[in-house]
Amino acid sequence: MHIIFKLTKKILFLGVFLLILFFSIFVFFLWKLSPELPSYTELKNYNPKLTSRVFTSDGLLLDKYFIQERIFVPIDRIPKSLIHAFISAEDKNFYNHIGIDFVAIIRASMTNIINKFLKKRMIGASTITQQVVKNLLLTNELSLERKFKEMILAMRIENILSKKKILELYLNDIYLGYGSYGVASASLNYFNKSLNELTIEESA
Image (cartoon, rainbow, N blue to C red; front, top):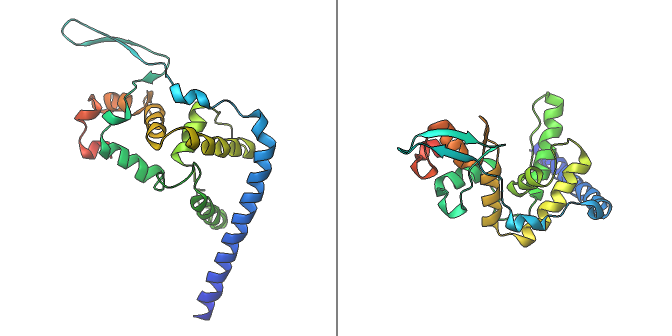
């Protein structure tokens, strides 16, 4: 019992230490990076380049023209089951955080310290808002500076966009393989169905 108490105390101490360390680094990067961040207000009226489809007179697809396979669907027309599936898998605290999830960051940091010693795969703590920032405003560069830019912009976006709009951007832009950007494009490519035709199993 005494050993468990000491271990719990050490874990709590490590968590507090990591939290203080993270906030210190975050404040530094907020001061350093703010002047060079890209504009994010354009996301209010974001218009993706969509796929053009040519059909025969009887409705058969003849050809497609696109740079990236995209079909934009308003959030109100995306099935609730599909929305819940993505939130559950990607960002369980989506409706509660401010763009970044501090609890998830500390949890991932502590887990990754253990995984480093056990030579296991590292885990991430990016929110859906952060993924929107990375996909639409930044690059996939792997650097600490880029990660903090992502966090800062995510917090700012949460101040100008509703959670509903952020979800709409995310679900219409996420890359789902097979050349598909967005859930509507993936639905056609994988199941040859529109979103409202998907079963609950296919949505998951």
